Image (cartoon, rainbow, N blue to C red; front, side, top):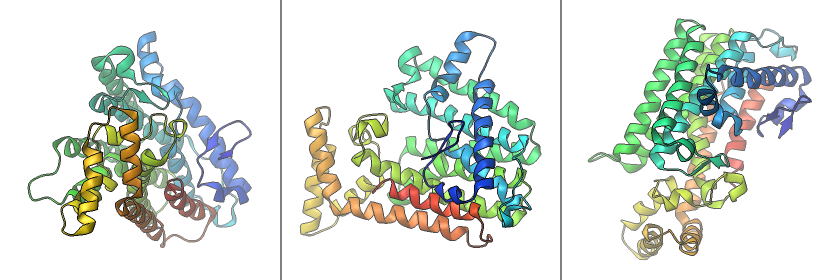
Length: 354
């Protein structure tokens, strides 16, 4: 982690900025202001609304979307080639706040739908106040985010509206499941693009746009954000199987226990449907994965079997390929500390799952 003097922790992967003091200073100063603005934006007239709306924000998080918004804005700074950048403006910081608020709003809803007991190491909102209050808290956060976005101009509003449509559609596709005749892997990538890639892409687009970058750069950040977002979620799926409870903020193997489709399990199902000795091995692992996993010992056996199967290694290769595609999308941008940081972040996304 790269940490500002004032205490903001920059997610690992943006360490490439450490060699560029003015750029790093501008980013970290802006993120300190974003963090303060975030809590201010989640204040309401009554105490319960404020408590509920701030619940997940106060629990922490990587703040990847605000970081990407702020960093992308520097792509339009005329001083970037020399590393002498100016202060990041209030419109960019407000967009960064909105990106994080939109993300938080979706988490309230996700936890209700998934019946998740814990989020970011804290009790999920629905466990504290019930499903209805948790859903309404998410709606409240999104409503306030929309108010803030309306102050940033028509394009910003359109980006948010289109992103929210994709967020909901991704969740709907996940809830519906694979359609008749649809490839399960393509369905899964579409779900991740909607649920995760779209919002990270929006962060890059809004940062670049509000920072004064040209349209080609804005479109580069759209493609980069989409691909790195999918890679980020694919890596999270791998970490769910290999991480610790402290790292995850929940028990390892939770997705497996809850029957949540992941790339590794989808590849395992594909292998099990084939013919031959390898297919038989995949079916044996699949039996463990689909068995009763309420018992911790049974879950541990299933996790061990899945992570030892070739499907898990293949999932890792595919995740790295998505990250490489994100880096490739940056090719049109001139060399700069910001471009280097974005490339490093794409590497970090997959390295953390190693």
